[in-house]
Amino acid sequence: MRPVLTLSLSWWWLAAPAMAAEFEACRNLLDHRHALAEQAMKAEIALVRSIRERICPVLSQQADGANANDRNEPVIDYQALIDCRHKAEEQLLGSQRVLYVNRQQFRFYTAAGARLARQADGLAQELRDGECSQLR
Image (cartoon, rainbow, N blue to C red; front, side):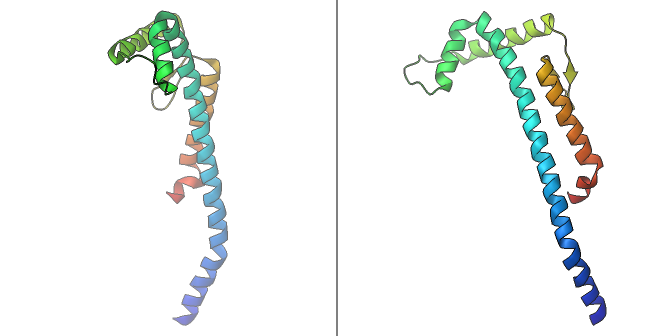
Protein backbone atom coordinates (compact mmCIF):
# COMPACT_ATOMS: atom_id res chain seq x y z
CA MET A 1 0.00 0.00 0.00
CA ARG A 2 2.86 2.36 0.85
CA PRO A 3 4.39 2.22 -2.69
CA VAL A 4 1.00 3.03 -4.21
CA LEU A 5 0.57 5.98 -1.85
CA THR A 6 4.09 7.18 -2.59
CA LEU A 7 3.50 6.84 -6.32
CA SER A 8 0.18 8.74 -6.04
CA LEU A 9 1.77 11.53 -4.04
CA SER A 10 4.68 11.69 -6.49
CA TRP A 11 2.29 12.01 -9.43
CA TRP A 12 0.36 14.77 -7.64
CA TRP A 13 3.60 16.55 -6.76
CA LEU A 14 4.62 16.52 -10.41
CA ALA A 15 1.16 17.35 -11.80
CA ALA A 16 0.29 20.19 -9.40
CA PRO A 17 2.46 22.87 -11.06
CA ALA A 18 1.12 21.97 -14.50
CA MET A 19 -2.46 22.09 -13.23
CA ALA A 20 -1.81 25.44 -11.55
CA ALA A 21 -0.37 26.85 -14.76
CA GLU A 22 -3.34 25.56 -16.74
CA PHE A 23 -5.74 27.05 -14.21
CA GLU A 24 -3.93 30.40 -14.41
CA ALA A 25 -4.08 30.35 -18.22
CA CYS A 26 -7.81 29.64 -18.10
CA ARG A 27 -8.36 32.41 -15.56
CA ASN A 28 -6.45 34.83 -17.79
CA LEU A 29 -8.53 33.78 -20.79
CA LEU A 30 -11.73 34.31 -18.80
CA ASP A 31 -10.54 37.74 -17.62
CA HIS A 32 -9.74 38.68 -21.22
CA ARG A 33 -13.20 37.52 -22.33
CA HIS A 34 -14.85 39.65 -19.63
CA ALA A 35 -12.79 42.70 -20.63
CA LEU A 36 -13.79 42.31 -24.29
CA ALA A 37 -17.46 41.90 -23.38
CA GLU A 38 -17.32 45.00 -21.17
CA GLN A 39 -15.74 47.08 -23.94
CA ALA A 40 -18.37 45.84 -26.41
CA MET A 41 -21.20 46.83 -24.07
CA LYS A 42 -19.67 50.26 -23.47
CA ALA A 43 -19.69 50.94 -27.23
CA GLU A 44 -23.40 50.15 -27.42
CA ILE A 45 -24.24 52.12 -24.28
CA ALA A 46 -22.46 55.15 -25.74
CA LEU A 47 -24.51 54.85 -28.93
CA VAL A 48 -27.86 54.71 -27.10
CA ARG A 49 -26.71 57.51 -24.82
CA SER A 50 -25.92 59.75 -27.80
CA ILE A 51 -29.44 59.19 -29.18
CA ARG A 52 -30.96 59.78 -25.75
CA GLU A 53 -29.03 63.04 -25.44
CA ARG A 54 -30.38 64.18 -28.79
CA ILE A 55 -34.05 63.39 -28.10
CA CYS A 56 -34.13 64.22 -24.34
CA PRO A 57 -31.33 66.71 -23.70
CA VAL A 58 -32.63 68.07 -20.37
CA LEU A 59 -33.20 64.62 -18.87
CA SER A 60 -29.83 63.46 -20.14
CA GLN A 61 -28.10 66.42 -18.49
CA GLN A 62 -29.89 65.69 -15.23
CA ALA A 63 -28.88 62.02 -15.40
CA ASP A 64 -25.26 62.94 -16.11
CA GLY A 65 -25.30 65.34 -13.17
CA ALA A 66 -26.70 62.64 -10.90
CA ASN A 67 -24.04 60.22 -12.11
CA ALA A 68 -21.38 62.76 -11.22
CA ASN A 69 -22.85 62.93 -7.69
CA ASP A 70 -23.63 66.61 -8.13
CA ARG A 71 -25.91 67.45 -5.21
CA ASN A 72 -27.14 70.68 -6.85
CA GLU A 73 -29.00 68.90 -9.65
CA PRO A 74 -32.81 68.75 -9.40
CA VAL A 75 -34.58 65.48 -8.65
CA ILE A 76 -34.70 63.26 -11.73
CA ASP A 77 -37.96 61.96 -13.13
CA TYR A 78 -36.76 58.37 -13.50
CA GLN A 79 -39.87 57.22 -15.33
CA ALA A 80 -39.35 59.95 -17.93
CA LEU A 81 -35.70 58.93 -18.21
CA ILE A 82 -36.70 55.28 -18.72
CA ASP A 83 -39.28 56.31 -21.32
CA CYS A 84 -36.63 58.40 -23.08
CA ARG A 85 -34.25 55.45 -23.06
CA HIS A 86 -36.95 53.26 -24.64
CA LYS A 87 -37.56 55.91 -27.32
CA ALA A 88 -33.83 56.01 -28.03
CA GLU A 89 -33.74 52.22 -28.36
CA GLU A 90 -36.79 52.25 -30.65
CA GLN A 91 -35.18 54.90 -32.81
CA LEU A 92 -32.02 52.83 -32.97
CA LEU A 93 -33.94 49.71 -33.99
CA GLY A 94 -35.62 51.62 -36.80
CA SER A 95 -32.56 53.41 -38.09
CA GLN A 96 -29.60 51.07 -37.83
CA ARG A 97 -28.83 47.54 -38.86
CA VAL A 98 -27.92 44.97 -36.21
CA LEU A 99 -24.34 43.90 -36.87
CA TYR A 100 -24.12 41.08 -34.34
CA VAL A 101 -26.23 39.31 -31.74
CA ASN A 102 -24.19 37.71 -28.98
CA ARG A 103 -24.83 34.48 -27.09
CA GLN A 104 -26.98 36.36 -24.55
CA GLN A 105 -29.11 37.78 -27.42
CA PHE A 106 -27.82 41.34 -26.92
CA ARG A 107 -27.85 43.32 -30.18
CA PHE A 108 -24.75 45.21 -31.32
CA TYR A 109 -25.11 48.12 -33.72
CA THR A 110 -21.61 49.59 -33.67
CA ALA A 111 -18.75 48.04 -35.62
CA ALA A 112 -16.48 48.19 -32.58
CA GLY A 113 -19.09 46.64 -30.29
CA ALA A 114 -19.86 43.86 -32.76
CA ARG A 115 -16.16 43.07 -33.28
CA LEU A 116 -15.45 42.96 -29.55
CA ALA A 117 -18.56 40.90 -28.82
CA ARG A 118 -17.56 38.36 -31.50
CA GLN A 119 -14.11 38.09 -29.92
CA ALA A 120 -15.64 37.66 -26.46
CA ASP A 121 -18.00 34.96 -27.73
CA GLY A 122 -15.08 33.22 -29.44
CA LEU A 123 -13.15 33.15 -26.18
CA ALA A 124 -16.23 31.89 -24.33
CA GLN A 125 -16.50 29.05 -26.85
CA GLU A 126 -12.80 28.30 -26.43
CA LEU A 127 -13.28 28.19 -22.66
CA ARG A 128 -16.21 25.78 -23.03
CA ASP A 129 -14.60 23.51 -25.62
CA GLY A 130 -10.99 23.54 -24.45
CA GLU A 131 -9.17 22.26 -21.44
CA CYS A 132 -10.66 25.02 -19.31
CA SER A 133 -13.98 23.16 -19.27
CA GLN A 134 -12.24 20.41 -17.27
CA LEU A 135 -11.36 22.83 -14.47
CA ARG A 136 -14.88 23.88 -13.51
